[in-house]
Image 1 (cartoon, rainbow, N blue to C red):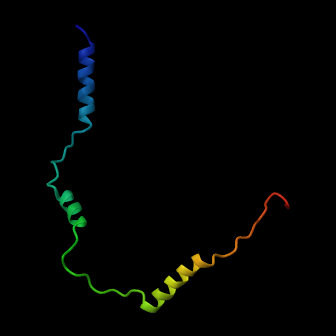
Image 2 (image 1 turned 180 degrees about the vertical axis):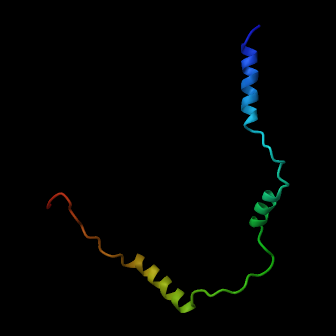
Image 3 (image 1 turned 90 degrees about the horizontal axis):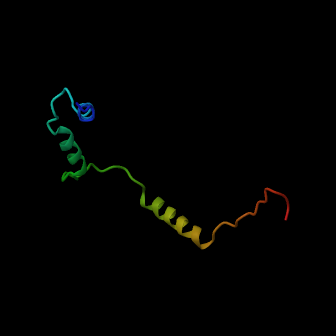
Length: 82
């Protein structure tokens, strides 16, 4: 009798036994919950407080101005003077 096929069969049973569960398969509730979280609700959301228009306009102008006149770069030498 050759032991190689017997050992191979036992290995397959042990490996497949790790995939088996004692509880019944899920009813798909997890999949339905994931799908529901990815679908946009057709109901409008309640209005929430946001940024005032004046503040947003000033922030945007400040952002655009940072490209027009960038701050000067300071040269720092860590290993002695040049």
